[in-house]
Length: 222
Image 1 (cartoon, helix red, strand yellow):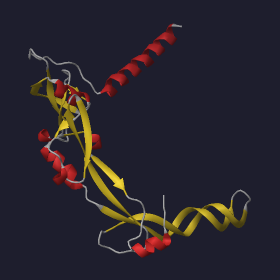
Image 2 (cartoon, helix red, strand yellow; image 1 turned 180 degrees about the horizontal axis):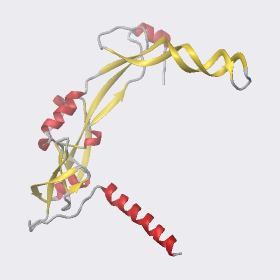
Image 3 (cartoon, helix red, strand yellow; image 1 turned 180 degrees about the vertical axis):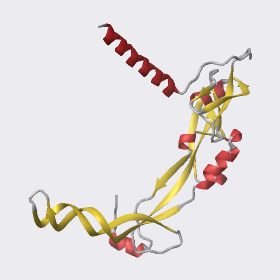
Image 4 (cartoon, one colour; image 1 turned 60 degrees about the vertical axis):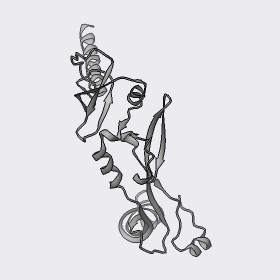
């Protein structure tokens, strides 16, 4: 019975340790600021944001000496885990300028390798050579999406890849977001972002570059 309790205790201690580590929060650190405030935290990617509490680090973010007096807007910014563009100009511009519109074509070609389909081959289930549906190795026709330049013409179906910039504004006790097509379109009131959803990828419906061909084919591809 004692042995069982020791093992159980050990397992529970291990689970607790994993929970503490996975929470990403370290111990509190001393702070002599005598009014409600929040410290700036920065990670290795150079992203900065304000986080409530006095932890040495929160997940990958390390506490800095810089702080701000807490107010209603800052409370919303912290609760929504938002980053201020003015504190992250270089990072923001690098992320936004890195993505560019592109195009893909649905291209088919004969390739050699493993595929699933109908073919005349050795069937391990019947132990005979026959025409059956299953796994085969050999040349087969395969279609896949491949990148092409925006000025390249193809008779194959195409789709366009574009990106939106998702930004937030804090107004009247709320954080509202809006999508922008480019930096030039950004409304100056939308000056916050979340690192996880700053760039939103969008894929268009499938179409043909030749409008007449598109109309005749009425092509649809999921």
